[in-house]
Length: 408
Image (tube, rainbow, N blue to C red; front, side):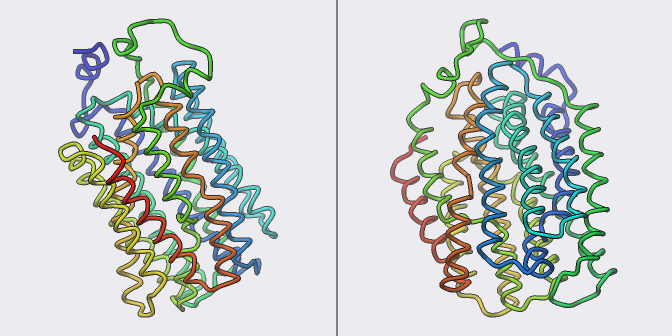
């Protein structure tokens, strides 16, 4: 038994896992309550309140997400180098919390981009170290369960945030198709509170995890970034390549929200559809993680990408409102099947002392800038169905590649 495993078993476990997993899940829960209230309706704020077109929505959604993804490489590498994860995670959560209230003052799309950039800057700093801390806190046979629990709690926070958003929307403006400025400002005020709570919970309850040196055979800590960026298993490299193919068609979820409104779904129903999305996401995450521990990650991820391809094809062709509800539910199933399992797969494929950098590389590949810019252009230049047809095609290609080129 490794030193890490012995110490981990000595601590009181929650849901049969290291307490870090649970408390990081709680932190993500409150953060997502906040983020869903403030940022989920940003595409409608840009379109309805500020009068921005699809291209601007693509720039705001894609550029902010790309900065986030690229920064994760450096934060992950730095957490590997210094051997600490919590301090970087805390810095990231704190930055996001500080910038969120400024959305109250947004009057042009450039301000929205700046605030969104700050929020994604914080997420870019925190995500890879946080994921590495989760991986450090569980044994190999618990990775699927651990990441599944974290994703479930994170996503339940999103569902709660959207329910609160629906209450605010209905209270301030009732039904109707268009988002109003006053409604959005109330969302920002209410959404700031849980963000502050998340930071406080992280400070108090999450503990740095001691590193297990048994897998490296040395106590000397490499300092060269070259060390952390090279020497990966070929399967990890292939997996990143296939993720890049998938991501070319994986535009910002801003376009899913715009598509619902484009099909004449009222604002309150768009929010409730997002609640359904997050509930299915949360419900599926833990079972999918446990299933991947037993059957292997590759099969589960392949199934999830197939669901994504069919959902995007559905968004391109749908015309009935009840089918839009079904597509949002199935979209949540895709996220629940893939998100946590893919992160567990990364931990399977890399050495423990390179996990932070590996998660940074993984998230960098998930950069949504090219996909969102392409989607925005297709939305304006062709039609609103075109971005979804493109996304479905790339998902099928990535799915086939995963089946052919990777073995567990």
